[in-house]
Length: 45
Length: 316
Image 1 (cartoon, rainbow over the protein chains, first blue to last red):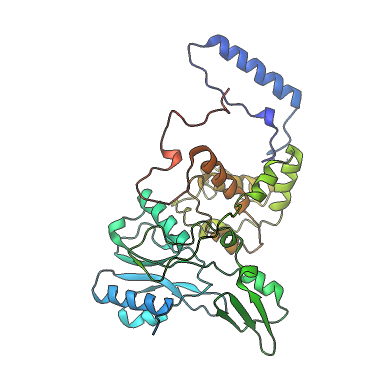
Image 2: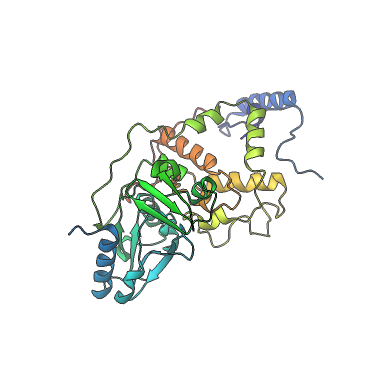
């Protein structure tokens, strides 16, 4: 629908997978930071 | 003498009403303008002559069955029967209440296409199998029916009723080798920015009248998400973001349920091609779950069942 591919992530992390959680969060933050602020689906004013 | 489709519909309807097998028959009657048949509920055998059948019976009659308590006879094309099956699966009506009079369908005419093609006021439209003649006061124009079909009818995969008690004529030939999703694939192939621009343009004329929702046989929620005020899921204005939210969400509510009956596009006063959304989801359901909506009343829909083999490549 025109949302950048790297802005939306799906992941399955068990409560026992703390290291995977850290890993995924770091990757998500890095990829979203690289895209910059979202301009789509944001209402003006 | 060969009985025509209309005669057969009237005969079966009269019999059902006489035998008190049904309290009413839902079908079509002539509208006040050419090319505009309207739904009618016939309750007395004497009134069955109101019933008509031609290429302007495109309204999906499944919409009129939601939560009804009576015993009902319903005249149904291929797509109507698929939506009736969906209604039964979703407990909106029971199979026992219904007598389905199935009509094999050769496609419905898009009146907008006809009106745009002729330069005069149409007083009458005459159909002779696949030839159609539009008549005005002192002019006429001939068409091949194929040129003026609704877009969803042109790519229809199930013109014959899938669920019925009576069939009024022999099944029609199903067109082979139709590529239903050529345009969807084109949109899929676009770059992110082009895709955004495409939908911006597609929805730019939307006036948020919700006619698409009102005509849709799937949109039967007592309170639609767009009408809720606490919480207000989507703004009421015609802000492009709200409009886009409405269309995307509505399409997702129809995922795995839409039969591509074309009601939404047909009733849109602005001519918006919103089937682009529903057909993308239809394509995904077919590719991911080998699912086509409303083909029988036994199988649970894909969003209602879990299979360990369901595709999950998008989960990392």
